[in-house]
Length: 339
Image (tube, rainbow, N blue to C red; front, side, top):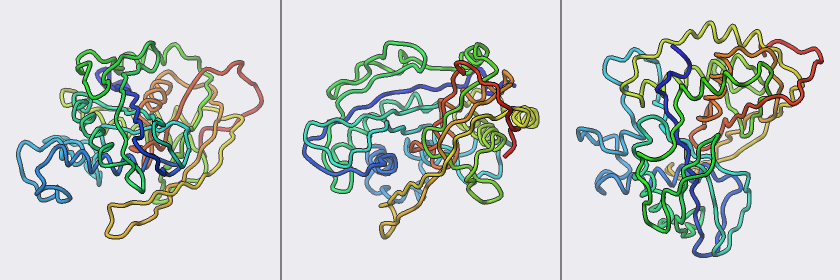
């Protein structure tokens, strides 16, 4: 089976809030939006008796909140039986805006990436983000209005207006969706020499430890597991993925890495869902590296990863990668794809 499968689907949306009063926001906003969104999603999906206690809910079929945040493994699926937690069918991706103070009428924009069956939940997502703005953003719960949402194809223009000033303009039927077949076609057009950029902290765990150096093999391993899980959980009509992991890892090991410029960055998030606010360090590596002699299947895998993120904490923006053609390719001696 190809990676990703031909029916694998991803859609990307751009959301814009407009602040109603002045207020602070952390420089790194992904965790704040993810945490607040979870609260708002439950409030718009469940009766108040379920708030903060979804584990006790036994309703069948599962409510929207449980299907998105507590997805159950498909019946009879042997895929990733040892997984502690299901992946989420969404990613919140922030821009490089690191302002820590917003004035009334300032805007905050970010991307929402939906995957597989999560795409059909777009109205619930937008209703929840609208609710989040009413609850308030940031440490002082600054009120903000969800003003505009557009659907954005990663490789085509123009964007499609989906939501404007409180009114849903477009159903999910008409939004641009990228599928696995399109990813494979585009990857086939890419050259074998690529530039890989790690745009937000990449956290890959190996032998129980977050890695502070770059390994293409580790990245490929994480991507195959993530795409397999996303397919199993959120593409119910797709057969169980049968991915040749060994072949992909061997291809990754054969790639030459050149001109690597990788560094570690610290990134702190304060969780307000604990009995007492708790600060967590979610640092990772960022930077760029040239990849030489990348096989077509590996190009498709990396291109898919650039759409859905990879690694720990990717649901709120970590692990954003980008690949593009080298212009022009360089020729100094490289190293192998192993770390």
